[in-house]
Image 1 (cartoon, protein in one colour):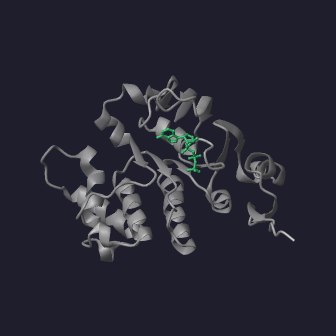
Image 2 (tube, helix red, strand yellow):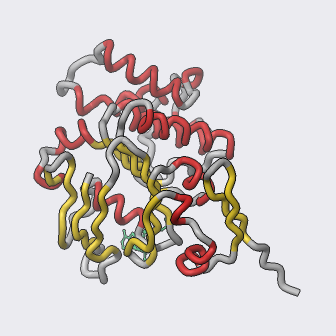
Length: 258
Ligand SMILES: Nc1ncnc2c1ncn2[C@@H]1O[C@H](COP(=O)(O)OP(=O)(O)OP(=O)(O)O)[C@@H](O)[C@H]1O
């Protein structure tokens, strides 16, 4: 996936992302981090055709995503947007089965391949037991995991995930990151995910992209990128960075007023 000179704006507003170029490593996991409002979700929307660029283009295997028919794009690119809205009354398995739409005919029944993909995705997020439960009766974290399962069931070579660990306790966040990491390292998919937790991002990402003010402030291996200077400069955060198991861990300084 290649992002070339991308400028993104909402309506007539000033651009949020300006002239951004990014080469996404294939079959690896890229995490996009950055302060609130730095343009992470906007960039992901631009990369997934939810937002039309003012300039530039996004290439998927050499093809401009805006030139691809919607159905073909959906077979290649799975997207988890921020705060997806759950259709009323739908069960977990039904929602996950929607991930199979790009592979099916208009009124075709689920094939055994579809069923296998759905079962595997539900198992991957440990929700097989709740498959027949209406999604609006699940907890926030369970609901988030159903959405992730839907994107996994889509079986695409590329995944764009906006904050997949929202609402998740740390143990489930780690489980989801393991699933996402395996999608890249075991299955060779290309993953781009927005994350807020810098330590989690640094533990899992092969490539860390730090956004600041609609631009890429730094990019590279987490251990090379995540420095105390960068945290101060881009996040306005005073923190100590220690290394655990070869990956940086961010320990924020306490800000206690006298
Ligand atoms: N739908 C929208 N219409 C107009 N402006 C928007 C819209 N969505 C985002 N923006 C603006 O674009 C800028 C970047 O927002 P964006 O959501 O991309 O940031 P972010 O880095 O993902 O932030 P966060 O960490 O808070 O999720 C912000 O100034 C925001 O107000």
